[in-house]
Image (cartoon, rainbow, N blue to C red):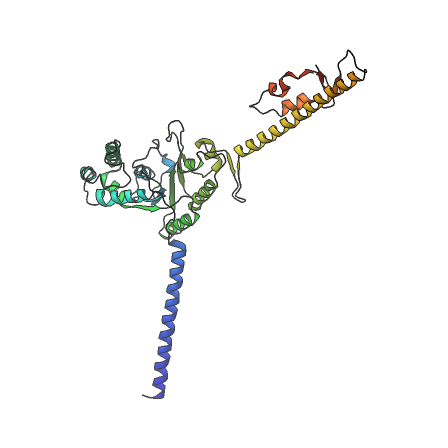
Length: 386
């Protein structure tokens, strides 16, 4: 082999090594970017509870102008009710089957949907097969009440009735495709990293029409708190990341322990939701991300009023005691005999007390149990010792 041939072979080897190194670098970079943009990290803290297999939200009819004739994705929570909502969001003339992404912190929700897909619908060819599979596998579906619970049979009946209704409404073949398109994720609606990656995934596969159904998660976060929960702030921001075309929310009725109202909105407006869902009145600033609560302001005002009330009463008692002391002193030295001492206080005490009186106190509280008798004056309040 000549020297020139050896040089050519060595140069080819260098090129191959360089290309392999470049491919490895590109693979590593792409893998890193893929993990950064698309990989959903598992949730560290999850819960395991009963699943609302059908859901207890009120019935809602989606207006025609909010429906889509394109491929949509519904980001929702909980059980089978999402099938009805996803189907309603599709226009009547569309040929696309909606995709459904279930986000729920309850790990049993994911297991429930896996059971519905694999044990109930996978081999079913009609709604009758679905009903048979439910009866045969009812004790293997996760999240249902125990077989010894009195609610078990009623839950199974509710599942069957719901699926029969959806089959009549959308057709069995379409219902089966919708169930196959369900992807359940055990995660938190208040996690910003999750919704950024969902947005990247939807953009990657061309899902531009995003619909949101968080049910009553926002009102459940708010329930039982005196002030606005910062997690509500984060949840609204997460929903805005997806830029949904329509979002559906429900409330919690304390007397019933269940939702009584559903709102379908094309705009994510926290103040609007606060008013109609019973969330504590909040003001949301996207630029400064500030939350203020009516209840916090009320508590601060009450504290201020109580302090003013204590101060006014202390001053009043002080002047009263001073008058009594002076009267006794003057009486002893013979300067006061038959007349009581009257002192004019150069402050309109009654006006101050009326102005700063909290609602849960009465004016009688300030009279010091009748120690003073008040007489009115145009400029002053005259307190006469009796």
